[in-house]
Amino acid sequence: MYDEYQGHGEQIDMALIIRTATERDAETVGELTERAYRADGFPISDEYAARLRDATTRINKATVLVAEMDDRIVATVTLATHENPLTEIAKPDELEVRMLAVAPEERRQGVAETLMSAAMKHAQNLGLKALVLSTEPPMSSARRLYEKLGFTRQPDRDWPVGDYDLLVYRRDVKPS
Image (cartoon, rainbow, N blue to C red; front, top):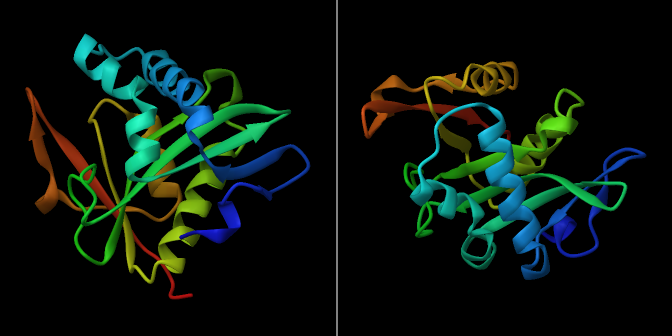
């Protein structure tokens, strides 16, 4: 388990705390995730919106981190290991990043970078070698963020969803 983010949270700077989500956070996390995805202007089916809102399943089956600012959850990310039922692409030595979402009004303040740093630390603590994630082709802002953080495209691992392929990215993490 990831002790630093269990319950008490870690103070990242004067305004942002990263902690592990609890079931009490599920409704807020779900609503935030859907709102963040919709803010990007991409069409979201009712079925996918329901998956985005279902934070209870993610909290119970994986590690869900939240970023709090002024006692408000402003961002979230789900982390799943290879054997986790929520994993779609992770290999045994990788941690999969799922559903990174930052409240639209809190973007461009380093919140996503801070959450991704916590994800890297979590992978290190688990003894894993890399983070992997999938993103949609139209999500150019997300792709720029991932590339800025050192993720590289893995085109041989892209996989189909509907009418397009999801793009896979990977970043090695340093051993702890």
